[in-house]
Picture 1 (tube, one colour):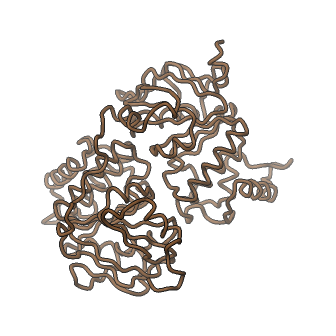
Picture 2 (spheres, helix red, strand yellow):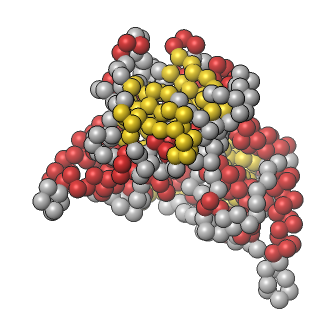
Picture 3 (cartoon, rainbow, N blue to C red):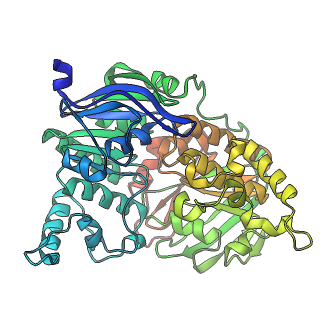
Length: 513
């Protein structure tokens, strides 16, 4: 046994995994040093998730081997992986939405007494202590599906750590986190590393990779491209190795002249909606990308849902093309004279029917348009969807393939394409690049700018502040449910957004917006 293998927590040698004619990973080899934080990078579909599933015991390699702490292992099931000290917090969370937090935390190893009965009180005390140690609190009796995605993700991570792993696999753990929650995860990773744990960190965010990780492995099209130290490679080189080409300008150019924008198409007046939005006033102009910034839970979700008729408007109103509009349901939002489409926070449960093919997902909001005499004209439907797929650069096979079989990036493209099929002129994009690789992000940025250049308008929220800075024409900042700042032009910067987002430049709660 060589020294490198002996000091490796995970050693992957010549691993290949195919699904029919599709080769997910091909002859991949790399080592992860024990007690380190190792990033696994690549575009959606590069093979990262397949490797995570191989290490988690959900899949087995066709050829090659995986060694844990220098010993070849057969990870034939999740239990076999757990027995080797491996735990995984998945991006596509494994929490059971209809069960309580307590029940989810106990799965699948609930403590049992001598009679075989589950010791719930014992588990409750232990889990409360565990969560307190991790630095966050949650009602253990709350139904998981009713909690926001960020809290669900923290529970997913907490459950994996609760099982005391020696090797922790974090699959896109920050895709639903922002601000203080990301800082929380960074502190947690540092603490686990100090205890000698090995962490595999999958992410598309280089800032987090640099902050958290010691080393990295880059995959492309199922092939191993490189493994090395994070400190020895630039962000530009990382991107080029991930996508196989240089992305000279990640963000497409903005219109230099504010006169490029037309009249307001969507206006919000003194809007109070949902549980958190207290007061919002703004105009979204034709041809504009208007950013909405704010830390989690500041009312941005209520705003987007209200504009799509999915959240109760308690006071105030909406105007479309300067005329007061009643949008009380998505049906109202999709009316031809309004034409609003929403890409929601969670594409898996809210944006797509994963078991249906791409064509059906893309056409279902306006299927009646393809049935002029009560019978669906499949030729018209296919032609409209094919054109939308070409615009968002989705492979034509998505027409006939279930949406759940595609990568997260392609799923998001399908989710966006349905509003192109619906001929929406206003897009509400709520964190649309969450969990998407750098190459696909660039494609979406270009698509967004092409959409506005053609006369469309976009209301855009992102948890990644650099996106707001470089992509948006203006940014409005929410704090405590109120619009507290508007930033545009050369004043747009991360600092200019974050100061009011943190309340530093914001009026006191209860003050007028």
